[in-house]
Length: 358
Image (cartoon, rainbow, N blue to C red; front, side, top):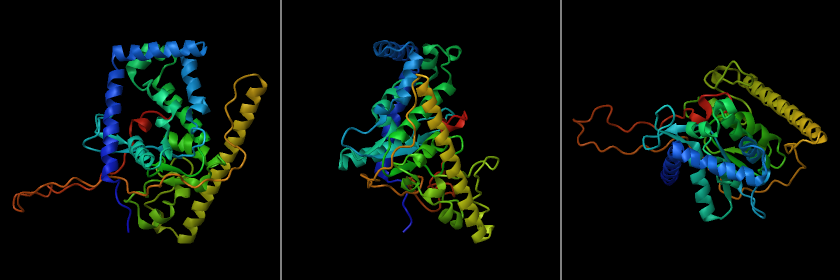
């Protein structure tokens, strides 16, 4: 049986979470709301002994304690990227009604935790993720109140803060993880920070990266079967032929089966080698900083651990939602446009469209 679209109860809960967050962001993006956030950050920064608010905010993104599970808990960590248009979702920066996969992931985690407390989490539900989220650094009014572009509070800096804490969250994850996305876009935090870190994290590893959504339905079946495998989607990319590790799902069926499988294996091996090299370089840089008396980021690689069983049920869904039925009064009155549209295809959301840092 083919996997079903995202369940209706998850859809409704995700929409509720998205609307609530949109209201908080709107309030933050006012002069009064932004100043309230800056005043709070000033007080927190001073109390923590930081020389500047900027330094304090950046410290939140590398604080592993803030994104580590509570003592005695081993929740299944969720990651997300992209999203899908939805007529009831808040409008994004382009004016489109768009539901980020963040809220689908959060809805899934809430449902899992209701069934088994402490069994699932997302970055934004950790202590550190909540703190960063409440800063609303993507809102123009907040960054302007902090000092604006001239003081380094740029949109790119805000995205780097989220990239940094996302990497820290991936470093702190253990056991099977679930990715709420169909693919990893080359400009996304998922592709550039989270997946490489999870791959190198010996408490997770490549075999424990699971995609919540099946491969895109518009792909040919051969591509869905082979490129759509979790381990392949966690390494190659399908959106930019000018960049390394690109695979073309559309052209895939026309290639010789043995040759294309060999090519996929070679791409995955190349990705694994690059990630290993990058991890070793990160460790060397961290060690060098430590020797110089500077704060060093926790290395990604750790001692091998026993991989735990997932504590939450890992979803396997099609991307999209069941269309809402449209009542048709009569066959004669119905036009071809009266029938319910097919589930929308995913597009890129605010998190990955306007800079290369996503």
